[in-house]
Image 1: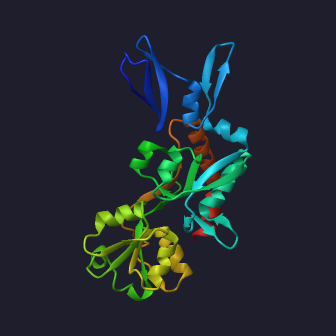
Image 2: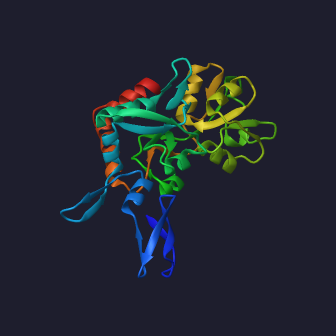
Image 3: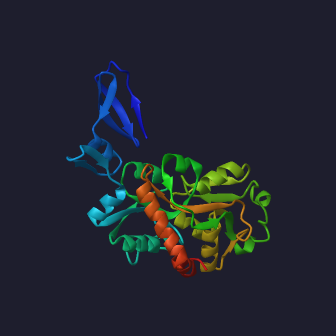
Length: 292
């Protein structure tokens, strides 16, 4: 959608396209904006048909295929979906494998772009990547600004605690007590949940999500609220940890892949790929490898 900041008597007006500032010209009360400028603001390309005198703003899919690569934004701090392996100096995880599968299906390469949870949306709007993948919760606020794919995993918020405290923390009420310290990463749904549901316990923001489980295990924090799948994975990897409520999480949510809005061709292609993955067992293979 393009919104105009103009009155009919202004010869040059400010125009916003997907969060990018452009300039248009008002001629006899009608605002004109360069199709090329609009296409570039949307991360797309424009073509001109001389025969029909028609301008076409092409899909981001066309640009991906022409470039020979797809740019995938990921945080690299969220097991088992996206995490940075310092030893191999590469991203790994459920959605990293999915990104490679998507690229292979399109016949292109993958270029991973590091982002953070606080900057996830703005980096997308700044056209730093074509799609974001890595355990991203489908939320209406994000959908209004961008575009989600179909969901691929159902989950809910669940506390990760020490194994020694599993009989101590048996409900949200027993966790929300003075003297209990909760570690949370900034900018994501974990912090949103904690801020909305915790009144008495101490909340400490820690920048790196992947470090918080270890800080629960060593006693720096008492609790980490995270997605039930992540809680299960960390508890299996460290016998000091316990995934409380993972079988009956506190919320019901879904993951999806985040894309630019206003491009149904690209979105439909990603959703088609996901449907094919489900039909042919690709999603089951990823689940068995990274979660089950």
